[in-house]
Amino acid sequence: MNQPTAGPTAELAATHKLPDPSGRMLRSVSVVIPCLNEMEVLFKLFDRLEKEIAHWCENYEVILVDDGSTDETWSIIQNIHARNPRWKGIRLGRNFGHQLALRAGLQASSGDVVAVLDADLQDPPEVAGQMIGQWKEGFDVVVGVRRHRKEGPLKRSLYFSFYRLLSLIAELDLPLDAGDFCVMDRQVVDVIVQMPESRPFIRGLRSWVGFRQSLFPYERAARQAGQTKYSYWKLMKLAADGVLSNSRIPLHFATVFGALVSVIAFLGAVLTLAIRMAPATFKQWGVEYVPGTASVIISLLFIGGVQLFCMGIIGAYVGRIHENVMRRPLWSVRQTLGVERDRLT
Image (tube, rainbow, N blue to C red; front, side, top):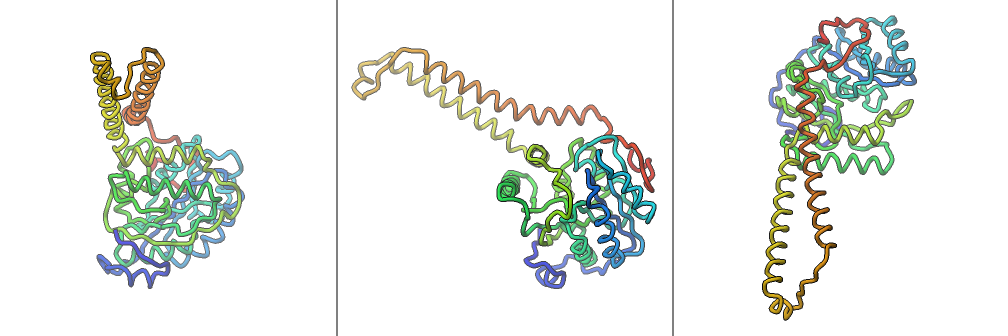
């Protein structure tokens, strides 16, 4: 995957060997934005994105996906749709999670190019316009890479560790510090929405699809209003989805770890038998057999803990298989504005 070293489009283009300088024409663009309790920022998003998107393309749509908000988010989406019907809305039946809300928006989109943004304006719309410039130069996926984050030191360190751990164990080439902010060609979106995963990890699927991809470093802004919806627990769930969706190394780890413990236990049993058969010899070496139950209990607890740990890893994979086998709909839709419900089934 090609990786640029600077932000502006011209400088980025100079650092790439462009795969297909086709000079694509942008005929239509879709912008997909998941929302959860974003009433404080939606009007700011509308004003700022409207100013920017006018420079991209005349034929556009913005799809706001209300992921079970409990505030006035949907009322504001209705207000925005009344102002400009090109701003469309999907109201899910409950909170299905950011990734499924994003997946629903991708499925409802129709543009030749689809841009994915967060509602909090931490992903600047102006940068999305520059990323579309990369698409015009021949790339099918342009991924925003965060150069600086505005979160606290603990959260920044967790993000830093997660992306590097995932990159280390993933079976795909996942770019570091890349979130969902991206621009994708219609071909890529069509492949992603065909994948019936109950817990999609969009940035992993985006890499799995392949095609011609480019990285676009940008300065991540601070949240414009409201509070982050990603608690530490939700971040842990997202991290687990990322690992389980893109790597089988935890299963291999469980196998290797179990085998290692078995070898250690076997060697311990052999040593214990040898000490009991030749106590005098081992006593000369300073090793003496001491009867008791403490060592046995500790060994059993250790081996039992290893077994439960490995079973937990296997169970996580089996649970995902179970969810997919049930073949439930990925979401329920309560209302739509400007979006045909048939596109969401």
